[in-house]
Amino acid sequence: MKLKRALAVILALALMLPIAGCGEIVGRYRIVDTLAEQSYAVGFRNEDYVRYYVEAALQTLAADGTISGLANSWFIEDNTYFVSRANALDQFDGVPPRTLLIGCDPDAYPLSYIENGQYSGFDVELARAVCSRLGWQAQFISVKSENAYDELMSGNVDCVWGGMTLDPDETDFTVLTPYLTDELVIITRADTGAKSLRGLKGASLAISVEQKYMALLQGDGKLMDRFGEIKRLTGGLQALLDAVNSGQASAALVSSTAISRFGG
Image (cartoon, rainbow, N blue to C red; front, side, top):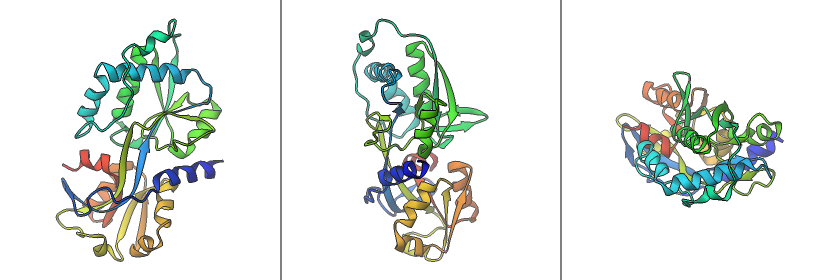
């Protein structure tokens, strides 16, 4: 089952669209290749009514400008999409109190990550705002996208939300319409790194340890052959950038949303 979920995530990533401009400099880094587009979404157990409360709260937060304000504080510009409906919560005859167990990726900066032992990020702040609007408590639990189904079905979490790249065509659990799309890009240092993918022949590439990233690379034989070494690192974005900055790796595979905020 875990393999099936991992493959579904890989398929959702591997659209192979040339979106980000190759050679574009973002802060200290240069984008030398764009591999895939990925979409972030929220997932719930099928037929779990908690989904409707969360969805309605999101609609009210979109209507009153809360989501836009959060997005503008976390991103260069607000590229998020949420349905806006000011009276969405009026459909309920009260909201029963509860603690919402939220599965989120601790390495998905700037959407969801851990800093000084606390969860932070756009998704985390938005989830807290939803719970505040509903009168709920929020509890965050570390989960990876490929484990979303298992965590939901086991009852470990009520929803998966926080840097979750979920397949919008999933049927074994409910995935809300993706709210943000970005790209997976290969970056080098702008000052000393290669200026194109051609310049990385035989070089080392740092990637996160999740299998979906290795599978994405393995889906392109020419790309895999270009690199002399693939370094799979724990520690999320910071570890990948540290590897590039220190020369431990010549390039890194990161999300365009993360690098746009981290590039300065």
